[in-house]
Image (cartoon, rainbow, N blue to C red; front, side, top):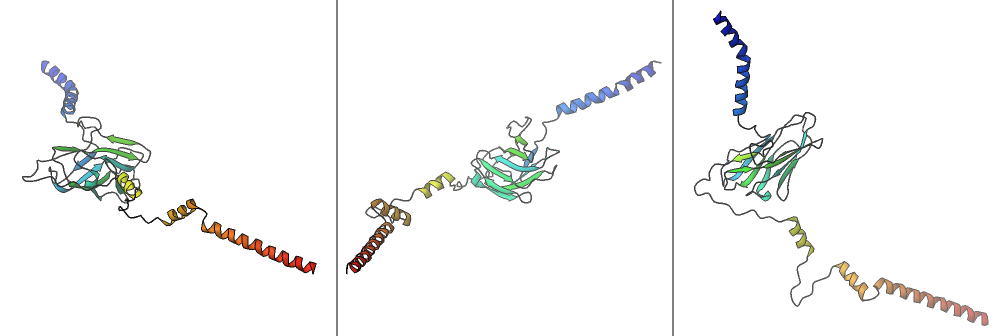
Length: 243
């Protein structure tokens, strides 16, 4: 009798034991993987011409991904990044702090996979690429947390130590739009002792400022001649009437 009761109690507690074990597994598991994954075969500090691949998982059941916006980690400038490949029809553009890849909306549930090439990785242990993922319905998933245990962690690439003898390369030359506009808007001063040749518009404006333009003078002359001709005709007719 005692053995039967023991078996009964053991069987009754099996579901509770299984539930407890499942909870233990969940609690002991690490943080959930980021929903934008990043990887590279040359993930090493100071490595050059490194292709980095990203996979932005679709988190919507009703809309497709249209755009991925990335804020670059310290040590990588937008000028150091070039577009490698991505979804059909998507385009790449840089901004002051990163880049954007966007294009025709992907089908609902389809991940946005693309890759870029970085001129040189910085001398660091890991790189976090803060990412904003936008859908056709206007929703934006913000994978920007630097804490890998957070709810919205930024995709992070871990780097091996730099190879012996590896050194930083010279920074990429950059020209900001503001600098370019300023240079084009301000003409270079003429050399001392010489006068810069004015443009046709400037020359015309200068003539207008100094006095009447040639067109106005021509009109005045034509009017005077017309009046003189009219006077001459009048005098001839008057002379004929008197005779």
